[in-house]
Image (tube, rainbow, N blue to C red; front, top):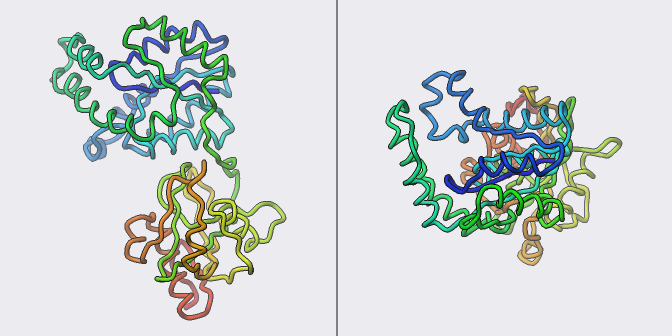
Length: 347
């Protein structure tokens, strides 16, 4: 399992984590900052200049998951991870990736008062050999207080177990965290994800429309980007039936009929993904009463909305948008299309 220590700069994450590994049996410290430091030496300067923080690099988020999984496979026990996560989509992507490997995450937030955070930032000694230290270190920390405040007012407090470190030493904080984790007061994060594929997969999505002919999209917690209701077809399961099952699980809508096929799209492998067949079905139009029966997002979904085709272009990754675009054309024509990587074939 993983004990993820979250918090703003100055909350005491790293010092607490170092104390914590002496209190939790068979535990190891894993600091994702090391991956960020490595990427600054591995990636071209042009790519690094495109992002404001190494957390914005998809490769960093992927390597955090892969490295944590590899360390646990090598060492077993518990990983203690001190790392600030203020964006919910990044948290969902990383924790969802860990969940896909059946790695449980207990999320702890060290949360002293903001006045204490500011004082700790102001009092921090910056080594004289750090170029532009005041800007790169101290001002960077100040700039992250506002995003921290916003996360604290929203998703973060509902997700993590809070420990006020304002009056505690790092050791006292570690004791509090160890006791909370040991007693079960810190629950395992409620992120649902199927195991990562080891070969090509077949996935079935279902397009549902409202009375204005807008299409339903969902925002999964376990991967980046919006998606259609649906999921991977299980062994021995008919693809259309899989789509019906996933719609019921994700939205609460029970489709009375087997949906008609719109698109078969072959998705080529793109490491670390294996690709496979992606099918889109026409689930029909929901009237206003049925649309109101849509469930609030559960552990798998962060949000859902009905969108126009133009609005979908700004939400879906390019390949999924092309799949949607051609599915809508197939719906208009009344004939299914075969695609490869989102491009129609044989027409």
